[in-house]
Each structure stands twice: as C-alpha cells, then as structure tokens.
Image 1 (cartoon, one colour):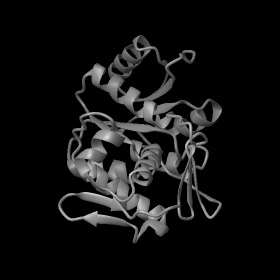
Image 2 (spheres, helix red, strand yellow):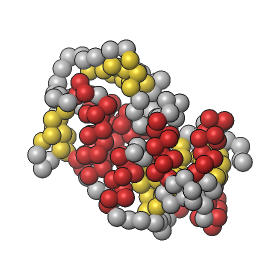
Image 3 (cartoon, one colour):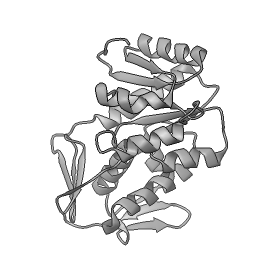
Image 4 (cartoon, helix red, strand yellow):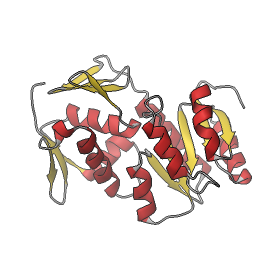
Amino acid sequence: MSPSASAGRILIVEDDPDIAHLLSHSLSRAGFGVDSLSSGHEVMIAVRRQRPDLVLLDLMLPGLDGLEVCRSLRGDPLTAALPVIMLTARAEESDRIVGLELGADDYITKPFSPNEVVARVRALLRRAHRTDSQPLRRYGPIVVDIERHVVTVDGEAVHLTAKEFLLLQYLIEHQGRVLSRDLLLSDVWGYQYTGGTRTVDVHVRRLREKLPVLADALVTVKQFGYKLAERSA
C-alpha cells in the first residue's frame, strides 16, 4: 500500500490487474495516495483499518460483487457517508440506477479516460470536503452540520451518502426556488455529467425516504425539476 498523499487517499477495488494499474498510476501522478484490492470480501476490513477518502469500486467483482460491497458500506454508520464511484463495463441505464439506488455517488463506464476518472474523483472530493464559514443549515427539525458532515432530525442522526448530503445542503440553501434537473447536476455533481437526469430523481427519492419530513415540502415540478418549500428554519 502506498502512503497517503496531500490530495487524499483512494481505495481502488478492481480485479483486472491492468485496469487497477492504470487507475493507480493515473491517481498517483495526480497526487493521490492509492491502495488497491482485487476482492470485494476485503473492502470492509480495509476501510475500517484505514479509512480512505474515496472508493473506486468495480461492479463485476468475483465472489462479493460491487453492489453488495456498496450495500455493506452504506449499511455501516462508520462508512455510510464515504464517497463511492462505481466502475463497470455494463452501460445499461438499469445497472446505473441500481448502483445509485444502493448509494453510489457516481458511475463511470468502461472503457474510460484516466483523466476523466481523476476529474470525477477531484470533483466529488471537493464537494464532500467543502467547508463553510456558517457550518449549520437548518430546515425545520433538520440540521445539516457541514463541518462534521452530519445530518440530524430532532437530534437523531440520519445517515446520508456524500452526494445525498450535498444535494440536501443545496436544496436548503436554495429553498423556495424551482431548480431544474440540469442545474442540480451542474451545481451538485460539479461537472458535465453524462449519466442522465434520472440520477437526480434517484437521489431525491432517497432523500424523501430517509427524511420523511421532506415528503410534502420537496415538490416535483413536472417535466422540469424540484422545489423545496421555503421556511425560516
């Protein structure tokens, strides 16, 4: 395993040695510390031993596949908010949606450009680690602590993925405005996302499920996007 670099530590979970080497080389050159695993069975042990800043997770792993690994990461409070980018050779939309439903923050289809992977990693980390001079966002009983990356409802913690956290923060900061899906993709995902606007719908649905208090307040604007009803706190 390589030591952590100032840009952050990336855990690559990929059973193809050529792809793993390509990813490791590209990320190392970009200033990241890189660890690599070839089996999904090792992931939970590895992240508990030394938590990475982000996981690049292949979908089609032998034994325990990437979907199961992602489900395990999201089901553990210690890793629930860990940023995950899923890698796959399967380009069907249904596969992307399943990965996003389970909590992946991004989805990259093989073959890919190493530069694109580095850009996606940087974009996701930049948003996951963003700090703010006013670290709390409040919406009724919901409190978003930006510095600690914690969301509570009436004082009880709610476990969100990195992307769900950023989407919730953005919606609260822009409450009362009608926000298009394209705008949400641009401002929350942070680059020219190619996965389609269904990605936004998946994450909004999961926010409503995890935060029932938003069920009536987070309104779908037909054929356009979403609006979070305005309130003072």
